[in-house]
Image (tube, rainbow, N blue to C red; front, side, top):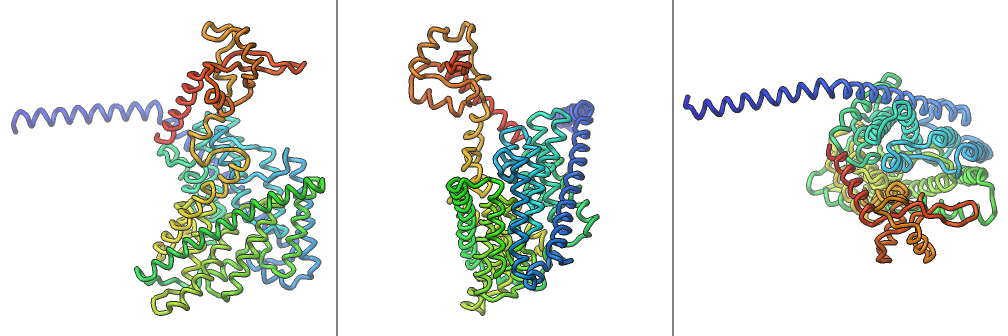
Length: 561
C-alpha cells in the first residue's frame, strides 16, 4: 500500500468518525424532542382516526333512524319505496336544524371545511376555528344523515383540524409545529375515513400543507398509519368500493381515449365547481333580496333537495350505491348522463344552501358516471380495440375528483386504495393528468383555493402572494420617537393629504401606497374615540420589503427542511 493510499484511508476514517460524532450529538440533543413530537403525532393520529370513525358511525346510525334502512349503502334502493312526503320532509327538517346550529355556532352561518383548514395552515400557524368547527361538524352530520347530497371528507378534515388546534394551544406550538400537527390530524382523518393510508398522508402534504418537506413526512405517515389502524380495527381490511368487473386495458392503442376522457372530465369538474359557486351566489342574492334569516337558508335548500329526491332518490346522501353501479358498468348510457347531471344539481343545492359536507365523494360519483358514459360510447365506436366500459368509469372517477381537489397525486392513490385494484394505473394516471392540467387553468388551481380566492384570501399563487397579508403594519412600522422615524408634524402633514394606513392593516393593503406615490414612508394611525386619526408611527418601504423577504425566507426554509 502506497503512502498516498494510506493517507486517503486515514482521511476517510477521520471524516467518518467526525460524521458519527455529529450524528451522536444530534441524537443526544435533538433526538428526545423529535421522538416526543412523534408520540404527539401518534396520539393526534389516534384521536383523529377515532373521531372519523365515530363521525361515520353517527351518520350511519342517524340515517338508519330517519330513513328506516339498515344498510346505508343501499339507501338509494330503499328510498325508492318511501312515501314522497317523507323524502320531502326529512331533508327540510334536517336543513332547519342545520341552520339553527350554524346560526348559534358561527359568526356568518357558513360551514367550515377543507378550505378553512388550508387557510389555517397557511395564515394562522396551523390553527382553525374551534367553536365554528364543532358546529360545522354537527351540522354536516345532520346534513349527511338527512339526505344532503355531499360527502364526509370536508367535515372530517376540519374536525381533525379542531383536534390539532386544541393540542397546539395546550403545548403552545410554534408555526412549523402547528402546521405539522395539523397535517398529522388531517392525514389520520382521511386515512380512517377511507381506509387509505398512503393517500391520507399525501393528501395532507399536497392539499393542506402544500409542500413535501422531509421534516413533516415522518410524523404525518405515523399519524396516517394510526388512523388506518383505527379504521381497520372497526371495519377490517376492506375497500370502500368492491369491483365485480376487473378492467382490461388494451395498452398503447387505447391510451388516446383516456387522454380524451381526461379532457372531458376536466370540463365536467369545471362545470361542477362553477355550478356550486353559482348556487352560492344565487342563494346569497335570494337571501338578501327576501331578507331571509340566515338560519332558514339550509331549510329551503333541504326542501328543494327533497323535491328532487322524489323523482331521483339516488341523490340522497353520499351515493355509494350509484357509484358502485357505475364502476360495475351496470347502467345505461342515458341513465349515467342523467344521474351525473342531477347529482351535480343536488350537490350545488346542498353546498349553495350552506348545509355542509364535502365535495370529494360527490366528485367520485359524478366522475364514475362521466367515465361510464364516455366508455359506453368509446367501446361502441371502436369495439375491437377497447377494454371494458367499467374501466373508463374507474378512470373518470379519479379524473374528476383530482381536478376538483387539485390533488392529482393523492387522488390517484386514493382511487387505487378505495377499490383495491392497482392493475389499471396507467389509464387512471393519464386521465388524471389531463383533467387536472385543464381544470387548474380555468379555476384557481382547485375548488378549495377558488373558494378562498372568492373570500379575498390569495393562496393559489403561493407564499409570494399571501405572506403580505400575514404582516401587520403596526408590527413593522417605526414608532414615533424613534430617531429614524418621521416626526409627528411630518406624519400629520401626510395624514392631512390622505396618506396613511391603520395600524391594524396588513402590508398587502399598505404596499400599493408605495407604488402610487413616491413617499419614503406612510404614517400609521389609530382611530380615536372622536373619529380622528392619530399617528403612532411610520411604515417605511425598506422595512416592509425586509419583513417580506424574511417571511419568504422562513417559508422557503420550512418547505425545504
